Image (cartoon, rainbow, N blue to C red; front, side, top):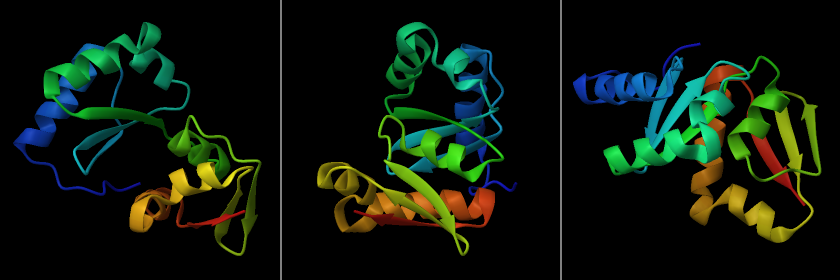
Length: 139
């Protein structure tokens, strides 16, 4: 796994603050549209978030940015579920190097795709970086 973003002093500060506050190691980091995305080991997201999300709320308040925690997982299906949480697709299938997501409602599908496909582009970037796959959303 390679980091998507180059480290500078500002980013190293974000990572250090995250690790001190949550007592959880950050395996990777990405800044996307004012949102800080921290990647942690499998089954570590709950610990990192804290009781009722207290660590995330505190970190978000201190840094004045939205914070998201994603569990890295070797299984691409579980990784995508972690990426799109709290949304739950009705099915996830692996077909010819693509993960195909199906959703029950058009509202859920729209949230995944985002305005002008921005969310889908971001998800594809992460999935390509960590699993060498692309994402497709169907009804």
